[in-house]
Length: 372
Image 1 (tube, rainbow, N blue to C red):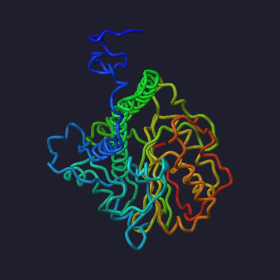
Image 2: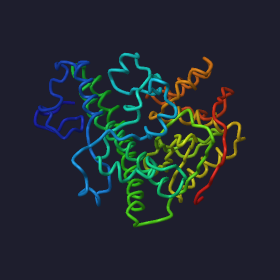
Image 3: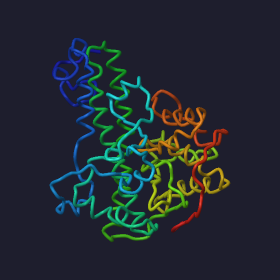
Image 4: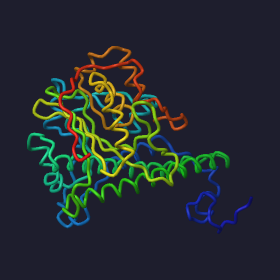
């Protein structure tokens, strides 16, 4: 098929063919330096995710906002030099590790940060969890959800930017190579845009609660212990399978609106907490939570470890706890980290199912159900 120079390009960019893919096979391929520069710029972009109703209050300074509290949680699990273990997800580091994501030492000043709030709103929105003991009241649970959802939006928007840059990966390739790359990116962007739409809707719900426009629309499960939690995490996921391997929702069907679960694991005043939060009317998420609560108490910590590392990237580990693990346990966690990273591998329906590799280091205390 021949395309005229002034016709719309076949790739769907909306540009004329002569300004887009005409002669693309003769272009110089994107080099490593260009890719790394894009990755760095994308990871350092600045914005404030506060509700549009409060934008007029924003300060001029966008800060490195912590998604996991530095003052309490990260300090609780850091080693003597002030480091935790976490994933350094940037192109330069992925190249260095030959495509693998591996836990590495990160200073607590840098761990879990993103440029997603101005100094004023980072203080006003999250002082309830940063400056006082965690008791699990509505204000604290809402603040935890809000920060997690904002971070996930930031990450998804960054993913969309990366996919736009990836379109340039067909420079210097023959037509079939160009078609393959453009089709892959187009499919990827459909998924990202769907997730962005769903997360934006969830954030709008949280905005309404924050502004007092609605109440009582959230459910929470709080698991605590008298000891610090050795793994800290803050993330959002649309669970596909429960802890028995049963299908919860099919994320491959973009016509179905996915239900999302927000989860946080942290320490405060020497105690450890795991908080699950979701929209009250989500029967799918409640089914997932029920499968966790159906486990024996001595199996829950291992189930949480499989869940945290299997579905989240914003996860941080106590170096002391990590060093106490056997090689088999470390291999299990490394395998969980890489699950879902390789785009051409099928989803593992049994990712969360007990396979006999269990973990210790945190004893379950109280379990509170709020607004189920």
